[in-house]
Image 1: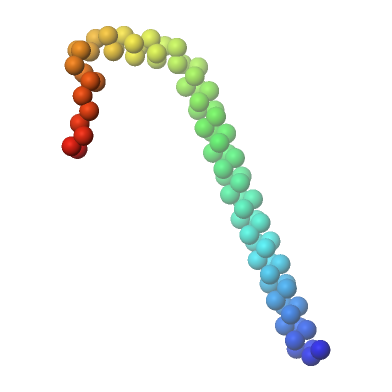
Image 2 (image 1 turned 120 degrees about the horizontal axis):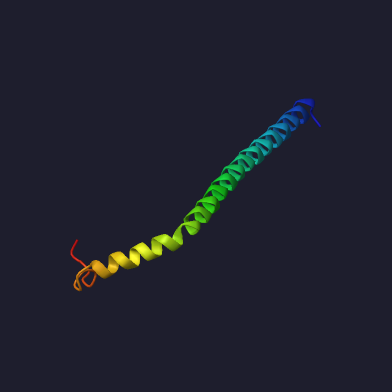
Length: 78
């Protein structure tokens, strides 16, 4: 086997390993970002559910104040 071929193959293997390490690091960062986004969404849902009782009652009162024809037609030409 030629020395140059062996060196070339070794360099290619190192480059492939480096690319795999980079890809794994990028994937880990993306997973961390997704995890923090999910945590924020869960906390937001918990906050909304805490005040949902008053909101449902207010929405029910507002719906009773609307005329009968509101919310019965759908504009399909828009």
